[in-house]
Length: 123
Image (tube, rainbow, N blue to C red; front, side):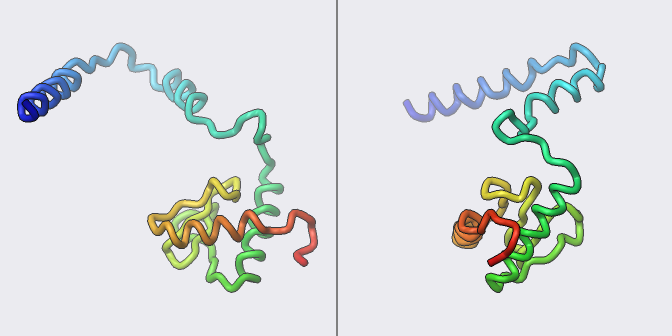
């Protein structure tokens, strides 16, 4: 019974792939629709200016260095912060913008970011 179900699912998957049809080649329209669909900026997280991003990035980098983490600018992308090539922090430089395959490092850095003081002085 299990092999029949697996075969059915595999055949169903192949049928779905064979039925993909391109209806419209207007890439500009589709790009705008996809950008709106996957845009992470919402009403609860307002869009920041380039200067505000730079300030937030500098403050986070300072906080991580103060906590003895080897944070540096990513060599591939100047918008990313990198910690030992094991964790990357993307804009808007908050807890949810940390990317890592190592869950232990990810959890500890996210904890540090959660405990980062919100005032302008780093004390």
